[in-house]
Amino acid sequence: MKEIDTDTGYTTFRDGVKSCLPTVLGYLGIGFSFGIVGINSHLNLLEITLMSAIVYGGSSQFVMCGLLLANTSITGIVMTVFLVNLRHLLMSMTASPHFRDESLLKNISVGSLLTDESFAVFSTTVAQKKHFSLRWMEGLNVAAYITWIVATILGGLVGNFIANPEQFGLDFALTAMFAGLFITQFEWELTKSQRKSIAVVISVGLSLYIMLFFVSSSVAVIISALVGCFVGGIMHDSK
Image (cartoon, rainbow, N blue to C red; front, side, top):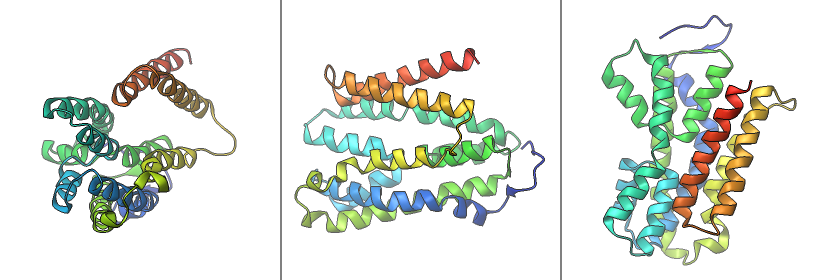
């Protein structure tokens, strides 16, 4: 991996766990919420645990619960989840050049456990030009992965006692966590790249809001993501 000259850096597994602490706090809440939503979507605790361990995608797992309640076909669920999680391919492709000196198996392990939140931490570290190692990335990913599974199990254990998760706003927990992580990435004085990021987020939010009036929520998410990519591409070319 190419090293960057800097005074600070992350090299150990423990450093990765420490970098993951903000994500851990968010996952405890959102994972707990998913466990409750999963139970109320007629999933049992084992199914919730397996979904968190194998699918390991907060947004796609919430989407799956909605599709199951709507009696969607297996084919429809698989295709929808595939499209929702397709962004992980792009994130993995972005991260992989930084670990080109590592083995294929290690790169696969990094990509398999990469999430929106861990990628945000990774991207911030790259932008700050801090040195980091594979062990740091593994600590970041593993800490998030274990936290997510444990949190969803805990949520599933108490899910039978909450008949209507929406009344507590638990279905909004994922959106709230993304908003919180987004805000923490910025300083008071915004740089040019940060202003571009805000423009992309606003375009995604507006397009999502508009498309929800015309298409299903899963399709609206895909279209708004494409709009965000388009806007980001235009702004990048015009720098």
